[in-house]
Amino acid sequence: MNLQDFIPRLIKLWRGGGSSSVLSPKEYERVSGALLRLQRGLTGDRKLAGAGYMQENDLLGAYLLYYWPVTFLQVHHAFETAVLSNEISFENEVTVLDLGCGPGPAGISFCNELKKQGVKKIHVTLADYSSKAVSLAKKLYESAFPETDVCEVIVDIEKKYNSIETVFNKKQGFDAIIISHALNELWKTQEDACQKRQNLILNIKKILKNDGILFLMEPALLKTSRSLIELRNFLIKEGLSVVSPCPSSEECPVIKAGDNITCHGEYALKNVPLVTEIARRAKLDRNSVKMTYFMFKNGIVSREEKKGIYTVVSEGMLNKSGRIRFLLCDGKRRIACSAKKDDSHAAETGFFKLHRYEKIELINPEVRGDNKDSFGISKETAVAHPLQQGKSHVSDRKKV
Image (cartoon, rainbow, N blue to C red; front, side, top):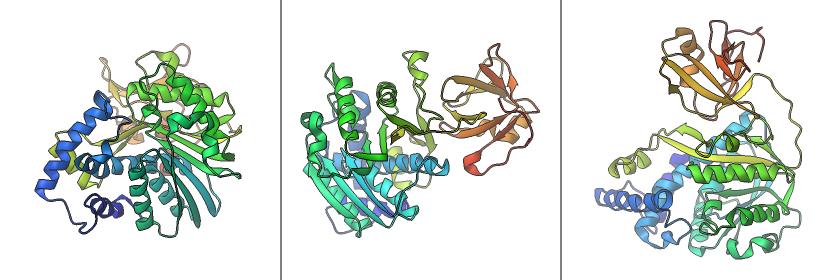
């Protein structure tokens, strides 16, 4: 299944059953107006973050018809990157905990990807403080994956975080635990929020199988992204290994790079007319989906260091000298790599079309910095795109 297969289900669910036909002009007006309120409340003044906004039908519509598809796509891209990188794989039977599930976009997208990988049997536990959100998620699961075993748990995470593992009757542990766009809503006004989130994850880790997957995702806002990166750095010291999107489980260099520096993924939004039309009517710019995420494995994972392999961690930036510059990360440092904006060879390698969190192989780059902290694209440089099964233009060059 793809996202478009879920759109009629989302429309029908919002309407309370009955028709799943396209929205009427009046419905578009209602949803786009509600989206503006919801957008300000979640990413602006953040007054709605963690609030019961799904109790209001128009706000529910804005979430189901706009934010739900966006979250679905975010998880799809994250999962696809990890699978193509050969970083994760699953057996025929998988148990999943979706903590802070809301109406289920992250968990459903995750399970959809598991189905694509040939997983035969999936057991899902949906956990949230909102019984309405859990009920909506279960209806979507029953509609899309009727063969999936779904369990509902109503829990106030803020109150139970110190013993959260006792809420779930899972002695054997879960194969995957997902927490999507939920951590930032917990204890958001409390000074010790960071420590409580750390304790929450450490307790959740107790019911994650050895080699199980922990997937954490947050909005691509400066504060939420940096908070998740700081949590990542804490968790790798507590026995978790990052397998995606980072090249290694070293401490992320972003935090030391400056208070206004962050890191997030970005992917083009394609073929989702419902979302783009709602955004257009609300006069919002929605050409891509952005998020900060980390996929961990429970335990120390030995990963072969691959020289010359980098993750793109910025968009292309034009400097005063007429060069397009991207920032690359090798897991330990952020390295600038640039080319003249009209360089035909750089264009041929696909350099100017790089996007955030894309993995590339950089072969024989021009070293521009005294400490090898800046690269250039010369005529001898090759840029390969391993996840696109791309071929480098130069196969026998030295990797840096």
